[in-house]
Length: 370
Ligand SMILES: Cc1ncc(COP(=O)(O)O)c(C=O)c1O
Image 1 (cartoon, rainbow, N blue to C red):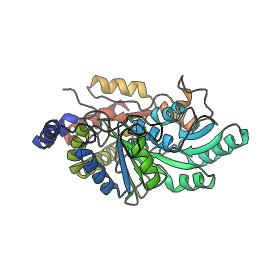
Image 2 (cartoon, rainbow, N blue to C red; image 1 turned 60 degrees about the horizontal axis):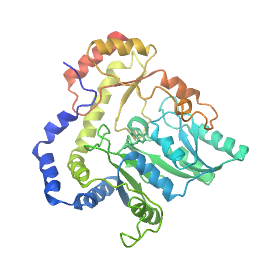
Image 3 (cartoon, rainbow, N blue to C red; image 1 turned 60 degrees about the vertical axis):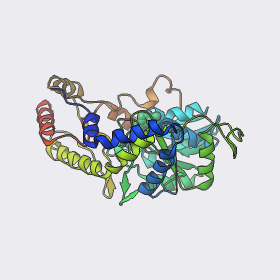
Image 4 (spheres, rainbow, N blue to C red; image 1 turned 120 degrees about the vertical axis):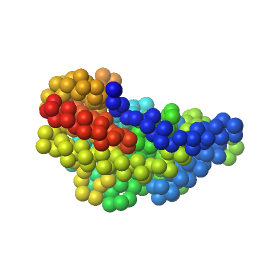
């Protein structure tokens, strides 16, 4: 038997004909671009997160990029991003011709370290070459960033904050989603994400009407009141109607899936906390468990032992962004915590359909390997 790292087929089987009917309805309806399901999904996402506005788009990378376009970010601007994340968080900044500045993360939560953000802003200001404009904290592995500490630091320095929630749709602090913490918050519907579609997809959440209006236009070639009037330079970044229909169905079971993920995470932690460093969730935070990630010392040995038992594992992420070949010339004060995490992180199979039996098998082999 091979154990899947994420079992999307189990989800498909569970959803049955509802999903297939939704897909068929779109193919028969013929409104493939910005069809009725897109508007409906945006409404449902807004209701789920209590957000004033939602703009769906082509993927989670574009979601970030469109916000940078709406904020007119460009050459000479500095945007602060964590060094321990997926490349897209920094890529969008570089793509605008601006400069990503790599900030270190907290060794327990793996999320942007507020003290290091403050020091990094001071460092860029002192250098005097770049204009600090914004901060993009990431809710890594499904756990919300420390917005309560990060937002006041950004605001005190006159910077905006944009949350990268590609991995954390539905993550909460004290029972509330975090979509309203900055000028915008974005997510990804890549298939492997907690709320995933059957292709690429993304969304932007904002509480600001002007930003919303700009985003609606930017994702559609900068259109004005008329489809062929272009009032700004935009791009083509729409969510397919087909993906919206799929997401509408998946959203119906999302809370149940989050509960299952939570139970599975708790089970892993209970069984492994004496042999490895298990994930730390601060009081009041609810993770959506996009990943279940351990810190282990002799990772190569553990990966190999698990592989021999047919258990897949992943290393998110092996290299800090500050050491990536295309990014190592960008400024940073140094990111020792990110570097150390890259050498120790190990993600185990995690999805809502992991059975107790399979999980016990994984647990016993992880314990043996450690
Ligand atoms: C932290 C983070 N930001 C951004 C993205 C980009 O999302 P997408 O793959 O939908 O473009 C991802 C996922 O791939 C991610 O994990």
